[in-house]
Image (cartoon, rainbow, N blue to C red; front, side, top):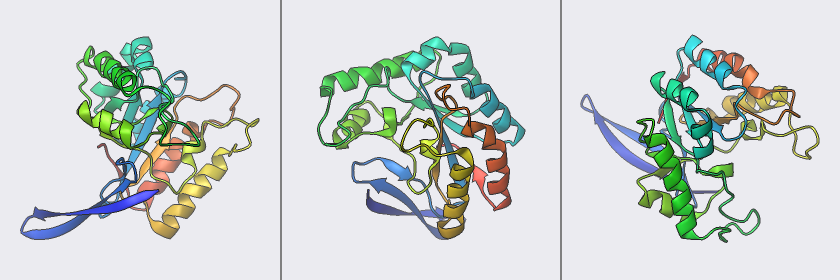
Length: 241
């Protein structure tokens, strides 16, 4: 659901440029400046991590920047990997400490956890990152599922809440063949290319999971290089928030 398109003006070299960002009904940024041919590759990490080395290698090879949202559990389990991500110049943001489901899947306005517990969960994630001298300002909620109260709590901790842009199926790359909503990597690629052809991907937040359940043999992150090169051929760059 999209609440509004925020427009503002930037004065650059004497010219007025109208930049546009999209914020959803709950206050999260779900699409950045639609006037710029920049795609924001977003990667989350919690319990699975087998694809991170591959993703980092692709980003380095293609000279692309990424945005990594990592839980406190992930940070404590893989401090060297997290430091490597930050040292490579990628954005490292918060993704909660324990990857808890904050609000109900069906009644989204209903919190499943008390506000003070959500605050403590996000704070613990930030503390884990700060021990590695990483001070994030961008937060992607666990499960990419939240409501206005969660966004408000995050803002109170100095965090801007972001989420993936709707329109493609990349966010379903975690699915396994036994799930009703399973989608193959070729079909995910097809959804991205089709959306780009119809609507463009300026300012798009494209979510990819660099670690997925072993039951999913068809790892979408293994298609990342092909995806980046194809979209770069269509005129896009890849940046960080």
